[in-house]
Length: 316
Ligand code: BGC
Image 1 (tube, rainbow, N blue to C red):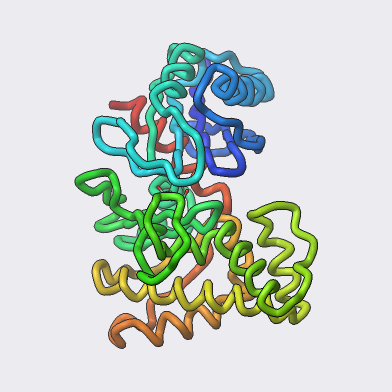
Image 2: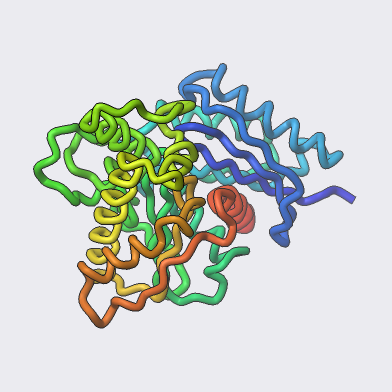
């Protein structure tokens, strides 16, 4: 009997993570590869090759893939014509077309990556059964998924949940990837935290710890645990700006829970108390007890949600 498979691909500024799933949401396999520029055949082929590999690993054929969800790091308007991509080079129409040609039986659907992560948590993670929650992904960029009445809000321009581009510092001289100034993402993303850390080191005439790249928060948190003052300053700034942003969101949505995903959230146990203290400092007291927890699916939430979007699209 032919299998029914669904693929979720989480496309981030740093890595592309495809996963292969059953209809019931069981993950059969997944991969992680560095993100190529996704603007031409070379980049698209890297993605289709990854999926081919996953399909082969479960001894299936390409035409057993019925739905593919593409989680991408930008707002997606209803007509699919993407206008702003802050952290990578992406031709979404081109990639969708390449996938549809390579997997002719599959319906291909794009979704914002953080919206996908919220869908993943609702489908198979910690948000199952919740009526409202707001999920934030703290990765190369910062995204959000706003769940109201059990559904992820899309917004009139596909930009509901663009939490990373809420302005938390109007006097910031540096430009954000979106072309504006003082976005949350500039302090709270992996890239933002590493930048702030390097600046704090320079201020102190201190050598930064060895960093594998511009988004290496693992080393930054390692330094933080050893008492590195510059790392402490970067983490404190991150907690303050994030606490402020969450308080603003509470004023609009007042969710039951905040769920943090993405690489930076892996270190939540290290900064949870400081973040909670800053959130409580800024928020209206009636919302001060809103729990802030880590995504149950961790860094895979976007991949799960993308597969779910592919599955739902295949049923339309
Ligand atoms: C983008 C969002 C995305 C987030 C995480 C932001 O820069 O504007 O759409 O969800 O990064 O990738």
